[in-house]
Length: 194
Ligand SMILES: Nc1ncnc2c1ncn2[C@@H]1O[C@H](COP(=O)(O)OP(=O)(O)OP(=O)(O)O)[C@@H](O)[C@H]1O
Ligand SMILES: [Mg+2]
Image (cartoon, rainbow, N blue to C red; front, side, top):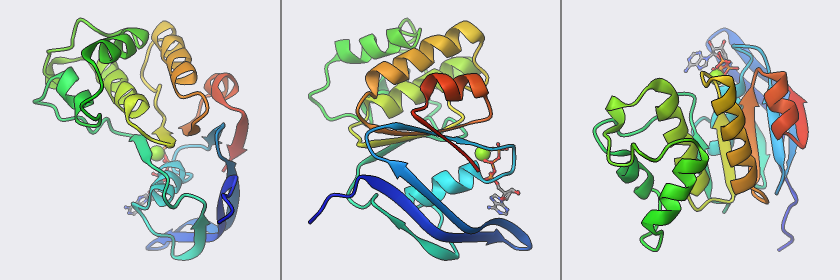
């Protein structure tokens, strides 16, 4: 079987009631690189990521090239287990061979670490966001989908996290949605406006 080099969406239409989100929409996302999905609020970025992840089905159209790929994600909401510690939230997506030091290393690159044993519910919004980012980066995946991952972080923390994601997901297929031009330029090999 020939391995496809792109994930392709063809002829996609998606409506919610009266609201047409996509009509005859097509994109091609190169594997092994970082693609940025840019679009204003309500334009359909989350819907598109959900279609790629198979969490939503298009009314019409096809998605090719993603079958068999292992996915990890930063959702628009953090979707962490609030009562569990930072470490447990991350360990949940790892196999047992991952050492404690690797988790610490990743947390430190994202500007965390001291909070390892803290229940997530006691963290600030920006700290929770970074735990969600570390979880997605560390999970064994071929493709990482991130929905506005750096939103709400202060400038220094945002830059640090962008550097972390860039360094630690190198070679994977990374799909990031954002409204922010600076993030798009820093992270993206390819920017798609939707
Ligand atoms: N489950 C749903 N039921 C009805 N309408 C929906 C649903 N999900 C999304 N929509 C509508 O689809 C459109 C696209 O929403 P989506 O969340 O994909 O936008 P977005 O680009 O991610 O926006 P934001 O930047 O605000 O997160 C919006 O008009 C939204 O109201
Ligand atoms: Mg969204």
